[in-house]
Amino acid sequence: MTLTSMRFAVAVAIAASAAFTTGAFAQSRPAIETTKVEGTDNVYVFRNQNHMAMFVVTPAGVIATDPVAYGKPQGGQQYLDEIRKVTSQPIKYVIYSHHHFDHIAGGKAFKDVGAKFVAHRRTTERLKAINDPNTVLPDESVSDRGRTIKLGGTTLELSYIGETHSDSMLIMRLPKEKIAFLVDWVSAGTFPGRGMTDSQPLKWIEGLKRLQKMDFDRFIPGHPGNGGRITGTKKDVEELVTLLEDASKTVQAEARGGKCWDPAEKELQFPKWTKMPGYENGRHLVVQRFCSLWGRGT
Ligand SMILES: [Zn+2]
Image (cartoon, rainbow, N blue to C red):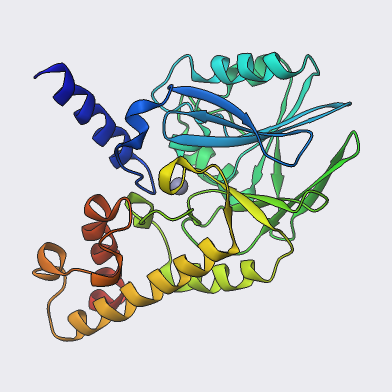
């Protein structure tokens, strides 16, 4: 394999491992990057390859989120090192967005400095059952009613909107900054992929419509968006609703014609979305999930 083809293969592998696929732009960027969110004093995005996490710095300590270190033994420490370049405040919290290890594995470095790990109750249930050696168990579980964290003048609301991309998803919203951190169930202009696997697509669409009514201007997704964007807007949420509804309707017709999973999974295209980053990797996964729904009732 030549170096160029190897780089390409690595970029494809990284893109294909994510819930939302984002294409080859990842090739030209550093593996690790920390960016302050424009227009804020204290909200940052930490990116490790194709995964992103939000952290918030306050005068009373740091609220971190997803360690994003699955398969990266140094990833948690590298995340902590990046925070240390910004502040020496203690890390008070690590909040998990949902239970998928590609987002939450690798938090040991944060546990070692005394951070409190917080997650939705279903995340805790699943982590206890599966007992992944690289994923720190939550210290506190949040009920479906949610929870508000206040630290050093910052308010972070954690809320649960039901089953979407997974059954354990917390919405993290900064009401003052009007910014939300939304992982895997919302994308900024990229086509869904493996994130379809354990989703409940109809409830997901309902959840997105309810999300539209929440008060925020921008969101940070769990994966970089179209062109490497680190934030999205409600326009992206609206586009995803349109996409999922279109895919659902298209596959429903195929399913009722007896085409699921084959030949639909091999052949069915979504003509409106072919130019969207991630389409080629994600198309069959979207067909597969909606085929399960409309072709098998599950
Ligand atoms: Zn996920």
